[in-house]
Length: 295
Image 1 (cartoon, rainbow, N blue to C red):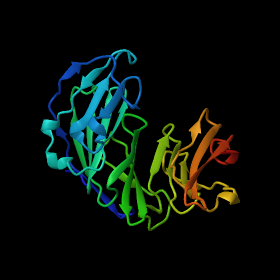
Image 2: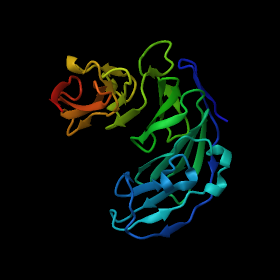
Image 3: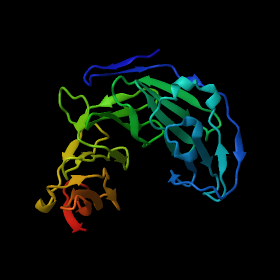
């Protein structure tokens, strides 16, 4: 057993050996499969009755003809102990070509169900992540080896986020210090949602909502997560008594131009909530942002 201990983060990642799971059958299904979560034209998935915390209810489909027809891919659920997934808060898949990762957390263990051959064979990877998260906000891989997980731990009126990174396809995970502080122990916020997006190996964003104000917690890296910079936005004074309900990350059309949408609310005199949309624009790759429109 290989053990990796991260003293600087206050979290321990004890990486255990992974177990090889039996090959699973693949069955042809109708081309008219409907699904809201489409990773690409090659993979899509859904959960029966929207049970996002149930590995048993995850349905996977794969296409080899650009989405014209779909084949159901079966997970070897009978080979996985029920104790390994029954207490998970959510199940999060991510796919890239023939590589796939299905992640979940049963505190304090991170489980990754992994395939490298399009779902014919699956391995289960187990990592002890200590207190670094109760559920997965976002799972993303930028290559077949390098991937990221933004995790969440909820408390009384607060949220703690941790960022985990792997460089070996999901076998080992390290806790990344986003703020650069010596006593870093996650990002504490008055939030209820968070998001992450890497546009390539170097450029990534983390966004966290705000239940007590309009300002997002927005972080950016340009060197593959080695260093993170907090981005501040100029919020008009008229929205200072609002709160931010969204955790949107910027959407870029090229390396320089992008937009960021903030969804904010405030309570009016009738105790009803009014929604406002603030759209910000960047022309320098995200270094600076100017407000483009208010709705």
